[in-house]
Length: 104
Image (cartoon, rainbow, N blue to C red; front, side, top):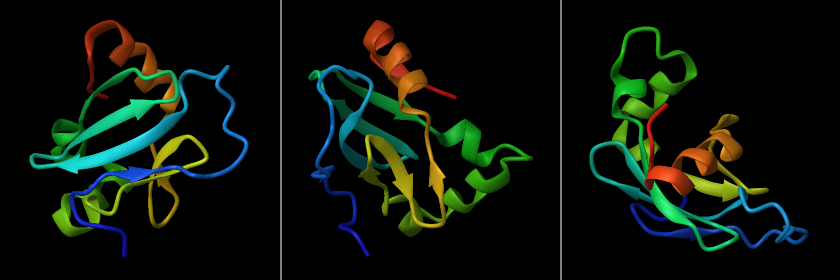
């Protein structure tokens, strides 16, 4: 298991600086929030509580378990959890680069 509520960095080779939307660091925070940093230095918060707690959350319903939520890590430029759960980094980047926050 990866560190609880600690920062995780993607050290995978081949991350291209020309793709600013690639996530390089994620930190799980209380309240189903994530702090993310992108390859170009842009940072912001991802607010997942509404997406996780609403009915019909689908695969994201698994993230209700806070221990599991804190297992977030970066793989190939995307925030990921075990079991093939991930977030679209390009959509996240667009919102965070404009407003500092993304809430799906």
